[in-house]
Image (cartoon, rainbow over all chains, first blue to last red; front, side, top):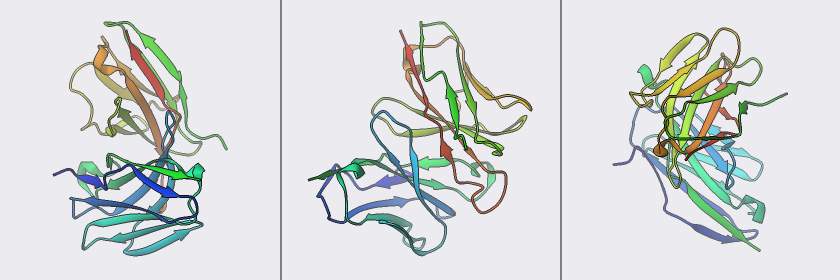
Length: 114
Length: 116
């Protein structure tokens, strides 16, 4: 089982729709969760961080965390063509030598078509 | 505020040569991380450093790879005797020394290493 798994893509949505990206993780002691966006040939860009169960909203983005289900998601409202990118879910474990180490999912490619 | 800086942005080496990749963290950040992204693969953790200390090198290949973050100057990822399989994008990230965002990592533009 992969440590961090994202829903298989690619995901294609029409402009203005809601894009839903999902991620599950295997390490129960994980405490910190991040969503990054990566355009082709570029570096990862931080979108959201979330640490507590529930929802966290920032503009058109909402991150949701459910530690009991070991599940984290990202919703993008009013999707724009400029949102077309690979979205990476990253998880940080709580302790030991894993502190600080981010484990990434394989990424979900999102395409927003006009 | 300048973000994470990496140089060179592109590096070409022949098999057997050495590659040195440099990373200057965000001003005020004291934690540095290196990740590697192989073609068509995900980002993989390599090493986590603080000034003059290696905190976690569990992702570093056992041979040919080393990293340092000296008291003065940038962090260096060094690859000796490069092989074609080392061709990848190498990203550096940094995070603040304390506070709630201490583990929020900001990535640099990366160094694309090509081994001929």
